[in-house]
Length: 205
Image (tube, rainbow, N blue to C red; front, side):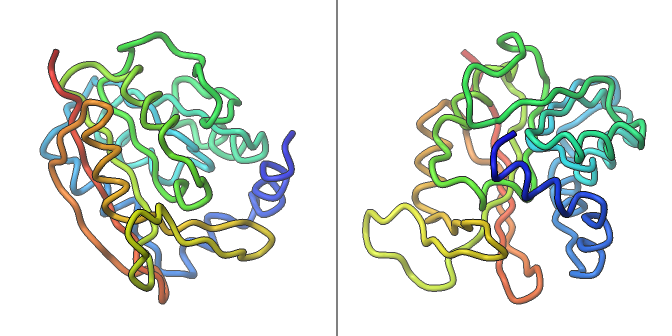
């Protein structure tokens, strides 16, 4: 297990309570932005599924949820909730992912990307496993101050973890560069920090 996975596992048991204590509703907001575009019976992959908080609303709406995470204790928590039909331990930054191309109707990733510096491999992985017309919905941390032109992110360390606030222009370029069209974006507060929720659609070939 990587050092980063061990750090995430260390707070796995308290994760759901921490999210509630922060009044963090990113998962609910992400689901709301996707609601018009999803249907019961469709398949959804949650990248960095953790304890399953982000996938749960989609499961309740009748979607078949699969999840991938590099932290085994998080996967155990998610498995106990019974919301996913398939869970796999895998680092989402490592390609290829353990799924066939075009095997999912939708892909989400909530509360994860601010721990990853280089998002391009993840975006390419999402494009690979998504069917044409499928959603890719995710969150990023919004920079607290303007970044210099061409600077992809701001970095700081919190609780022993490196945290990245990606430049919006960088995210927009990644969305377009791997074959997505942006549908929606929403900014919201989590404590004193601003996060963006992005919803993009895989272009039809």
